[in-house]
Length: 291
Image (cartoon, rainbow, N blue to C red; front, side, top):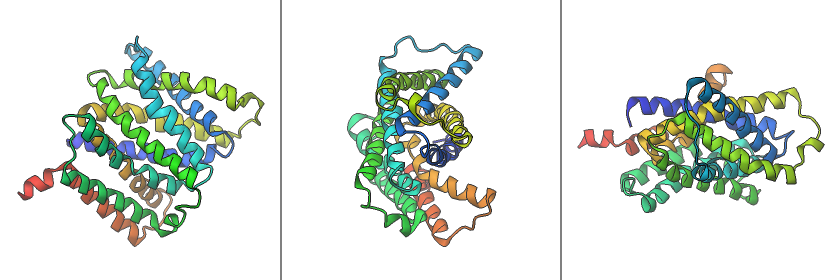
């Protein structure tokens, strides 16, 4: 990965780190499926408008985008939002950080150029250990108390892994077209399910705070986030783009420290160091320089 790739990955981690916060606010007043539909539909409308304004053509074949929308949006968003109604956001973030572990395994069997190596596996393990250390022992005590919700978050991580591999087929296409096509397809998948199961027109109207959280979730964490995601995926591959899940807790803690004045704990420093070591090992340049 180049310096530009790493910079985009850090920016993506900030955008996606905020998604757990925004979702936790909104899911208290909106059912998980309705929240997932609102997230992708608003983001799709924003990106389609941007595509029209910039002259980027939209896809004319939606079959591949339906698969991508299912694996990367409809299924994992619904699972994570439902999981967050039963477990803390921090625990959901830990479980989400298993995504690179699943990705390196799927990539090993499904690709010819992202094979599993000892260094890559060690780097992923170090990064995941850093996430666990940083989020602390209190959240680890929650493991096993809401097994179904935790399994749902793990299933979402597996879905993201397959999405990362499947998304390689969109290399060479503009990131805006791919992101808009994926979000439009996932909106089409979720809409009939929400109409049948949630019937949102019968629910109490959400508060202004919940609406603001939904709009931020759609505009920042989804529309802008997926523009970066597909750009990194095309440049650096599935395993590298999904390393963002390690950086999400780092972004959240650093933002809390810089913006809200929250103190950094010793475990935060240790966890960040472990993540940095893991990312350096996966990147490979440090090992090549040592040799």
